Image (tube, rainbow, N blue to C red; front, side, top):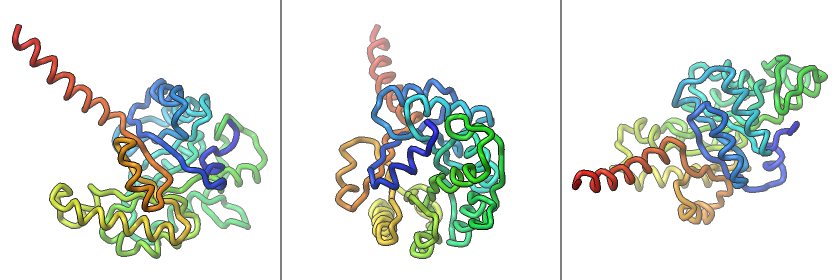
Length: 263
């Protein structure tokens, strides 16, 4: 793999399926790829520790199976980690906690090549990139930077207040609603305001589609997809590594504990 698989799918208007992992162990990425069912793997870097070498290993493992790769970043050090992730071979960057269109523009600027044509802030890091391509001509590097997929979480009340302006920013490829952070920013417990945050999510989807931005939705079961498909969604993230472990250990552990407690 030498090109951005996710960008190619977006340009072709194809739906995409991803899944979330927290492990830096590249074998986990290979397990996902070996299923042949996922277009990309999302490494949730916001939720756990990782080193720079881990980014290369995850991207490399995804490439073995023709998959794309996305990383979810913290807000504070997003520029540094985003540039390191791109140079390591990641194809998409998910930004979190943005509130305004100006913050979104700034993040995109840092992921835009520093050429007279583009006027961005990202220079010429001679790293592996997708499929190990060091030493490429500068303009080919610039195109790889342009091709990086930019994803933004919409997870603050202020972000929803500004959703029209955010979705109108050039370079926004995908948006995703975050109910937990959104609820916290409203002073809510999400379990007590389900209808309200679902209404906000529907509004985000409607506005995104109006602006030609692809809404992505996280689901825990394929049965959950129809609700979103009826709203126009074609991008899904199915499941989460930690949640899968927790659910399995919780259910199966309880069942076995009940058996052995009777011995």
